[in-house]
Length: 93
Image 1 (spheres, one colour):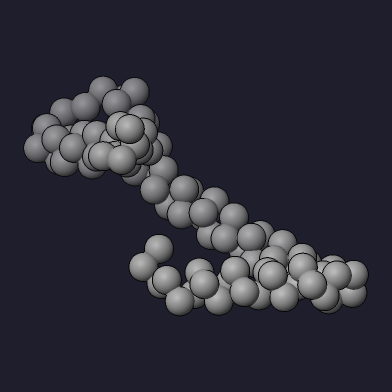
Image 2: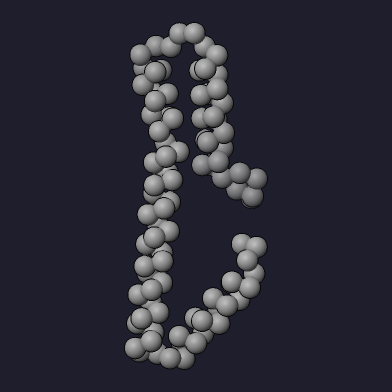
């Protein structure tokens, strides 16, 4: 239910943005704080790379699934196509 408002990742992202903003207003930081801040600033880029790689894997998996169904089960291939048509028609997701 709480995820309907914001996932853990979204909440952590907001906290990170706040900390980075507060750091820009702080004149001095410890060495550990500087290191942590650099790591914190790099996280969104790393998450983006992971999500991109995952999306590419999903596309490749779907390609493989279609090819297998084309060879082995035309009825299930038709079912999969119909499900995709419904998903594409509901482009609000």
